[in-house]
Length: 256
Ligand SMILES: NC(=O)c1ccc[n+]([C@@H]2O[C@H](COP(=O)([O-])OP(=O)(O)OC[C@H]3O[C@@H](n4cnc5c(N)ncnc54)[C@H](OP(=O)(O)O)[C@@H]3O)[C@@H](O)[C@H]2O)c1
Image (cartoon, rainbow, N blue to C red; front, top):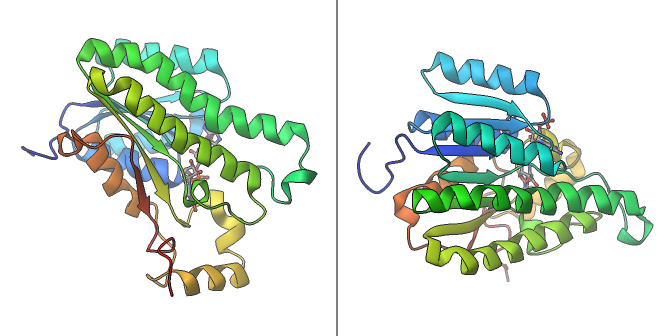
């Protein structure tokens, strides 16, 4: 592929790549000719995705690292940069949502875990990767937030607060890194059919309530987020930074 969307040979790190949205993004990146480091906690699950992609001719590196472990994330970036000679794209996609209920009832441990995985992990990765991107003359950081970062999800207050923080952090990093030719953007998906959100879409009442207020009249599939991630990784997004790209079937459009 040549031109605006040409990402051939670019190196990406995708966290949460063993399933769901991260797997879909990693797959589309690999198909577009990118070299992709597949990251999550479980090496077995990553190896299985890697095997599938390598069978299609992709150059991928499955490497386990917990998003709440700064040392593991930093070491992972070093391994990927050494293997591929640099990093062009970071997709901060891994996240957790362990608490379902009123925020006032949540123990501190729930806050700490969610803050660490959803905010500190992406920040630690940015800290490790920016020097590598500067050496390359630029790069792309793509943070997977959520529509719940724009409007809080019912009984998901901690998660929603972390996603709002991810959006705000995206804007700060975009300002701080613009001069380095590093574009930083967020994607805010609506409800997507993955394991992460299974408690929502497998409940017929919740599913009906969401589809009824979604103009598209359905929830999304993981692959429907991948196109936005490809745009944000490509030269086509060279003047796009600090933005929140909402991909939600129209659910956040206020309807009269
Ligand atoms: N699904 C939705 O409706 C929806 C909506 C809006 C936003 N999002 C966002 O989309 C992103 C991906 O979610 P998904 O729906 O695709 O979820 P998913 O299918 O459950 O996948 C989550 C991925 O993250 C990895 N992961 C989980 N905890 C981790 C940790 N502590 N460290 C490293 N990796 C970890 C998982 O692999 P391991 O188990 O191997 O670690 C897995 O690869 C998240 O940021 C989520 O907030 C999802």
